Structure formats: structure tokens, C-alpha cells
Length: 188
Image 1 (cartoon, rainbow, N blue to C red):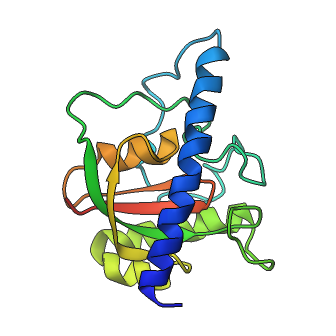
Image 2: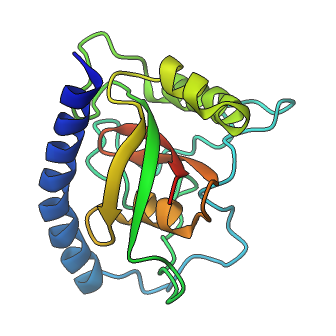
């Protein structure tokens, strides 16, 4: 499949996810936790999965169901996604490295486990910081250095927060989405 076809499939998946996001946001507003928002001291979703000396399994507290039904609704640590500030752009151009796992939308039958995908996403994040194109090449089908423009309000809360919190040229992730882990680069 060429990159244009992969990009078209990604756009279609994102459009379908938009309807789910709106429904889940409405549900979340009605069922907000009585304990309030997550602590401000919670680790940032844009932080790497693990340092070189740490076990990659450490940040994999399973806030997301294996099938990915809640993927993208919380940060990797299970914390609530903060609201984007008024300084966040209304639209961004971005690239994405996709690392799928069993149960994610579009995953192959022989897809890796979620834990293995998170480890690989951490490795690809380190590579992406020095060579984004190389990380794209090592990512799963659907990875692209130029995914196009994305307006706010289309993605699930966690990937939207990570993507729209980045400055131009910055890289963030990994962040869980219904399609797998994403490492994103804000181009413009």
C-alpha cells in the first residue's frame, strides 16, 4: 500500500474516531470522577516511556483495556487529560509513527502485545528525536512523516492534548490511541 492510500485510511479512521470522541466526551462530562482532575504532578503524556536504565514495563500501568476501547481517553499513567489552554493552536500539521498492538483498530491478527508495543514505542521515540524519518520507516503501516493538517476536536483527548501541546518541530508521545501508540511530530 502506498503512502497516499495509508494516509487516506488514517484520515478515514480519524473521522470515524471523531464521532466516538464526541460521544465519549459527553459521557465523561456526565460521569466525571468525584475526586476531580488528576494531580498536576502527574507525568506528562509527552514524556518518554522509560529512560534507558529503567524497565520499559514500569509505565505500563494498565489504565486502558486490552482491546483499546478506552485508548486515548486518559494519559499513559491513567491520569485525566488536562484541558488545552487558549494558547494551543486551532489546527496543526503533523507526522505520526504508529505502533499497533493486539486489539487496536486495524491491528493484524499476529499483532504484538500492548506491553511489547509500548516498549517499541519508547525505542522509536528516542530515534524520532534524532531522526523522525527513520522512526517513521520503522513504525507500523500508517506511519507517515506528513499526515496532513488536523483541527482540534477530532482526536481523542490524550492524543489531542499531546499533539496540540507541542511547539513547532517538537516530538511527543508515546500516547495511546484506539489505533495503537502514536509518536507525533508537530510540523506547523
